[in-house]
Length: 134
Image (cartoon, rainbow, N blue to C red; front, side, top):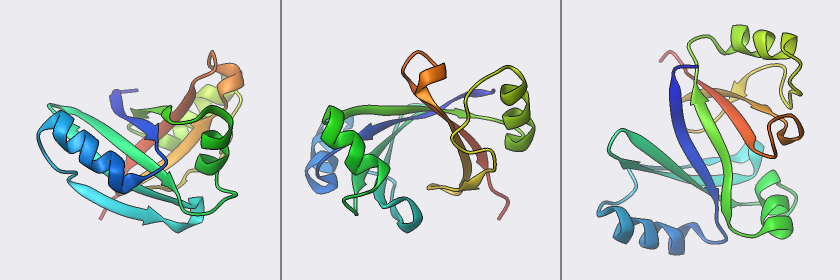
């Protein structure tokens, strides 16, 4: 793993939270997009070399909707940038981690993504991210 790619924060309202984070960081989000397959709308902020992803549910049965219902707003996941997501999935599987995704899928911000189950990572949802070739 190369670095922390971003921290994901589940929010009830992207519109309200965008205003809050714009005030906090002194700049608007650099990108907003919907990932229909995951039932989520996202916005991304930069703070120095770091990124924050805000996530709003677009369907009541999406993972973010379920998270918000169970835990409320807050940190949802930590994402790590990886060079080769397929190799990293295999390595982590060999190390005994519980994978939510054994095959990478298209995520937000031009990334291939896969998740590790929080049961095997001290209660923290971990996302692996690899930049997609354009």
